[in-house]
Image (spheres, rainbow, N blue to C red):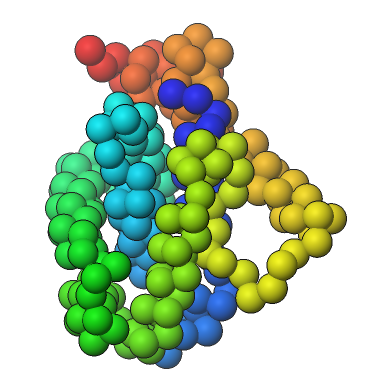
Length: 213
């Protein structure tokens, strides 16, 4: 796994923090709400670039993203048994999203609203979210996978941004990624900073958990 995957994951996280998106909310958002939006963005991302040429690469990105989600849930403080159940639920939810948005481009606005209502279990203005996701989907279709591996995943802005503003935004993204995710010097695996390596079970030179095969 490369740092390019970290860039994709961190920018998916940044999309869930889009202030414009949460203006559509009719209540205070929660971790669960943001996770659903992250999965929605990721589902559109995989849909846009799904083909035989990208099969291996997209599988690696999928594995990486869900690995980071698991680490994030662990950071909240859930135990192993609870985490395993939650991850199964989120994976099932994600595959359901992929199935429902498969024909998104050919669907009517009313059909798109009904799809969103399946997953958004909170009070939102689904019409505005449909418009938002349409713009995001269009942005994905107008670019290549390699563009997003090197750049920033985002919905189409209202107006063109200046190079200086783009540079400032990207510098903040890099701060976000370097602060939260690091590469373990011994195993080469990526993990959250100040957390044990789940593959080796090591933390600061001590064996905390049994290593995974």
